[in-house]
Length: 104
Image (cartoon, rainbow, N blue to C red):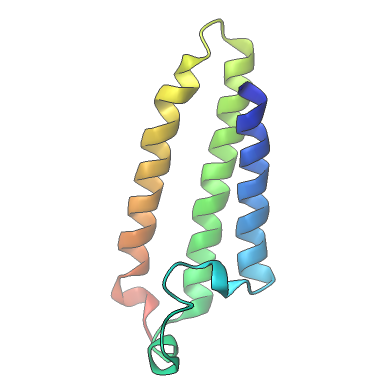
């Protein structure tokens, strides 16, 4: 179980980098279904930077949780910390990306 946190963390970091630098915008929920006029209103570079930062944060946190749970007798701590971090990060991402700072 502990090593799965590490693998998923690495995957999330790579996914964040891929969305930002390889322009995989179709992975952003809702962006793919927007009309051309709606897409022009979004500052996609800022949104992808935000998404990359959040995915890297979640990925690094998961890697850290994986290593912490390897050295602790009770590895349930990782499970207790995992969900609040992910849910909080996703809420932050949604609220921040829908703010006026990410519109043109």
